[in-house]
Length: 163
Image 1 (tube, rainbow, N blue to C red):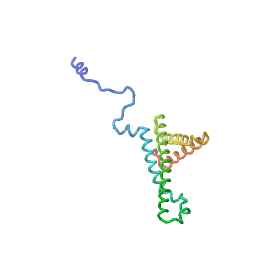
Image 2 (cartoon, one colour):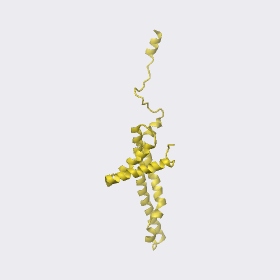
Image 3 (cartoon, helix red, strand yellow):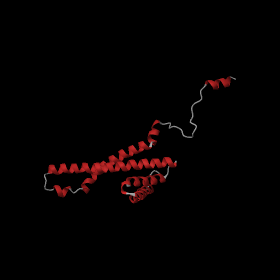
Image 4 (cartoon, rainbow, N blue to C red):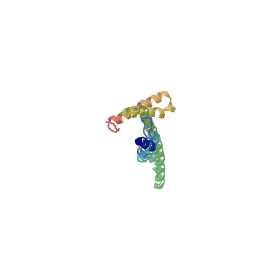
């Protein structure tokens, strides 16, 4: 009788009826959120794109022929403006690619319930299709195959996180 009273007085801890358990680490839910992964990948991709825009502008610019007769100050001003334009363009492009790829790969992983190289391949296919959506179904198919092949190549070369 005493053991029955001690069990009745002590409340039982709440447990979820499903196998899903909330994350023990508060940052784990943040890191596993597809939305947060897309935002972080977009920000990192945008930053990398801006740096690439600055670095690659001299190799892609036609300013030398256009500005060789101008004084140095005007050449510098136009060069910096061109770097800004290229930097924004590369930044926006890589921001979108990074965010869409990260979100699609995460959604594929969550829907499949597995963590393997097929997630990046299928995520790449979705990314290529989404990015080419305005160009029609044939372009979507080519984009799907291209991004999926690129994702497979990255994983095969060891840059992915799978063995």
